Length: 237
Image 1: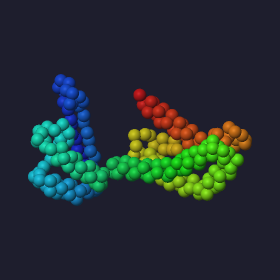
Image 2 (image 1 turned 90 degrees about the horizontal axis):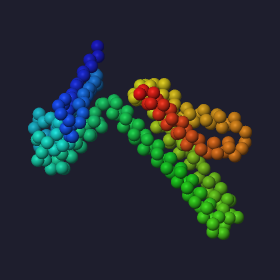
Image 3 (image 1 turned 90 degrees about the vertical axis):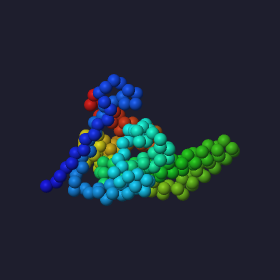
Image 4 (image 1 turned 180 degrees about the vertical axis):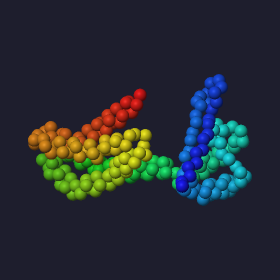
């Protein structure tokens, strides 16, 4: 049988309003005891000992932040060292919610790199086209820029492929109930909306509107997605 431990802590008080403690907060941590983090805790304790603290040293983050109690005479670097140890403990420990959040952040950063690279290529080509037109090379501008685009067009599917993981992972964390949203919100994923709008654009007759609609797909997708998120959050009030 699995054992679940629940740790409860509170912060603040019910007394008169104080600037440094305007709220009364209760926090709970649920720990599945089959997920062993004793090694991570032992390592954290060892690192505190290396910093010169006793074996039973306990961190109280409120006083640490406000430079109170035992931390009142500490130098900024000494307090920063404690924060750093706590940060890397949460980063490495087997804390599932935190791990999922960090994976999503890293994938986001990874996905933004090809997105930026792709748009930089577009900006360079369009800037070159404008410069050629304004400096007496208008006859050759289109040919030069089309040739440049053809040479780098292979980057488009590569960059789009590198942007996929973050959207797929976001779908996974939503459908498994690891976000504040309902599981059904997974089907408002950017890729799902893209598939619907792409299908609509393919049914449109050839026209300037279809060209504009297709070229602005990502902007249209994000507007729809933000609208759906806004409606979901607003519906809770």
